[in-house]
Length: 105
Image (cartoon, rainbow, N blue to C red):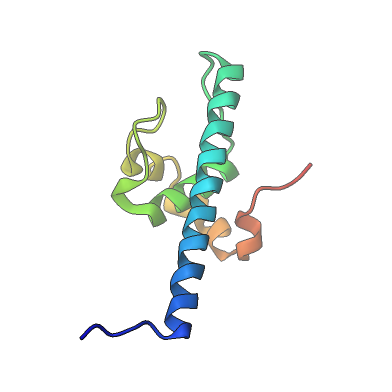
């Protein structure tokens, strides 16, 4: 005898599926935006300041080994995490989570 889903389980499953799809759409958009921006840069190298390197290194460390798919400047998380030293990133780590969000100009 099969057990039927109760309404709460059904709502949770539908909500989780919707959130997953939304996240996938955001990821696809950001990847395409990065491609477009890299096309505009051409062959020039991306130049990051210390604050940007720290933020990227912290994010890369949180992603673990599956972070990069072979982009041209950062092939794995150990490369990205090595951009910033412990002392360089101390100030970023101690800041509020809002500090890690990109700033609008």
